[in-house]
Length: 538
Ligand SMILES: Cc1cc2nc3c(=O)[nH]c(=O)nc-3n(C[C@H](O)[C@H](O)[C@H](O)COP(=O)(O)OP(=O)(O)OC[C@H]3O[C@@H](n4cnc5c(N)ncnc54)[C@H](O)[C@@H]3O)c2cc1C
Image 1: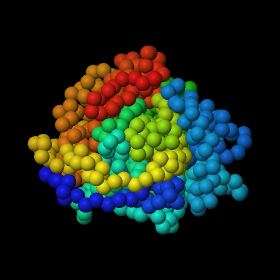
Image 2: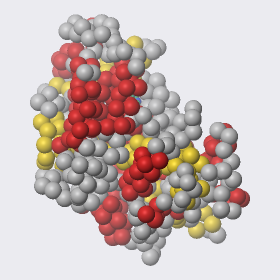
Image 3: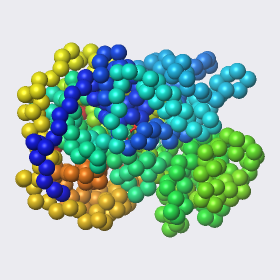
Image 4: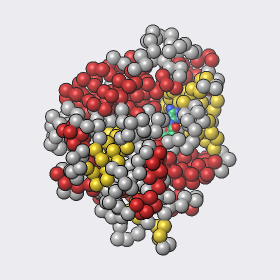
């Protein structure tokens, strides 16, 4: 990692800086547009994001017999007592308005005989999942949001710019430092910053998440002194494609909703042995059951079987899945599909209020990077797209309201100087990590801090991760270096939080204490750097 100085860093100013252009970032930017200049930064090319790949749909209450109360109760029930009722109330009450607005902006959800098709997913008491183009809901939502955002004159874009760090001074976030291949470093000052960087699935060997999901926002908020919470809660999706040389492409649970059966290598439909709801049990139960089968048969996957369903129906209902599997030589209407669980969604993140305010004034967060408490210890399927819309809009509104004035140049310079360590290697003599480090990290997290963990496995993971801990504050001069730094930070947060919560709850399963309950049942694990306060907040 080489040397850079703040003297070399050009500075620019905008009114609002939005980091990330998935559903949460775009929705926040649209909300902010009437209040000033909005700069959206993306480390790749839009629409590359988890939002783009969302398949199953978006949960929303549209008509009786469904009700706001039922959606509220299902979400809190899934959260196992750790969900924040006020945040959940906002999600389900404001959700329908946000979705109707999206439809007015041009999003086209699937209809039949003039009515929206509403699907039912596991742990939802009613059919309330809107979808688009069968299994391409995220792509359609992103198309509509991108069209809307691109049409707004006050919204500007900076693509292929990696945000390396937040600029914080005098207890206020004033902007961020960006890194790009073409322009090197640049510092952007802003009245308010919105983190919308998505999840951190890349910390695990197997993940449904796109390559951009390296937990950058969580790590940046943590390095800047923000509170990070609930990191032990990582949701694993039970069924991702497990074919050599293919990515862990998601096979939506809507497949199981339509009758797909999970089979082990002996051909046995095993789910009934684990839960009366069989294939329709919640994600954590199905993931653990598959993991158990894989361990006992010593195999890297089980199978998903849709070969008994009408082939035309399968092709029409799941066009993206059918096409993608065919690309890897699998005709799902005939052959068994090899599947295994994969890291899917990080429930924890930068702690926020229901208005997206983090613990650092001037810094807001929305979407998967944020932890506002709606998911508790387990996320109800299809609630996170809704989360991005509802809380992206709220964060935008709150950021506009909280920032009446610009920032002074002198304060910005002081702030920039304070984050010198990430920019200058003057104080660092850390060599680049070995090329194998990233693969080792992912493997360790998968084996020791994954679907099933215990004290011993987590301690092993912690020991390994600590060898890379110096990188968490080391200077970076490349995107890959920055992502590695962030992945180590996030992995350490997950492992330390999982060690802290000694009993099992929701998606956090400790085989050394599988019983739910214990003294930590209703409390949250939170961390703040640099004193690394760890423990329970009530
Ligand atoms: C395969 C898949 C299927 C899913 N299906 C569903 C579903 O059917 N329903 C549902 O509700 N949820 C689903 N989810 C979850 C849901 O899609 C995500 O939780 C949600 O889209 C996250 O939105 P976001 O805006 O927070 O982040 P993202 O959509 O991931 O966007 C993050 C953005 O931040 C940018 N970024 C990240 N780091 C930096 C950085 N350092 N500098 C600059 N830019 C940065 C990225 O480039 C990207 O633009 C699915 C997830 C996956 C992976």
